[in-house]
Image (cartoon, rainbow, N blue to C red; front, side, top):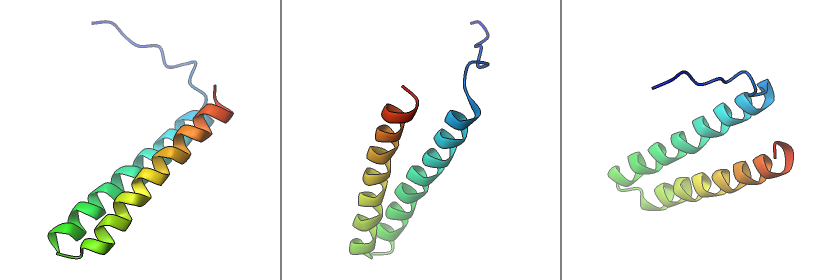
Length: 66
């Protein structure tokens, strides 16, 4: 196992990735919580928000950082 050089990662890419990862996984966990609370509509809305956020994240990565 060797060390990984992350000096080529820009601050903008790091912050964008961190924000979207926090957003996507918080929406997923909120959706799971709402499903356990038997609030199915709110759970599916949270899941849909996570899917939309991941699509927007992919689009931003494609346009700004590739």
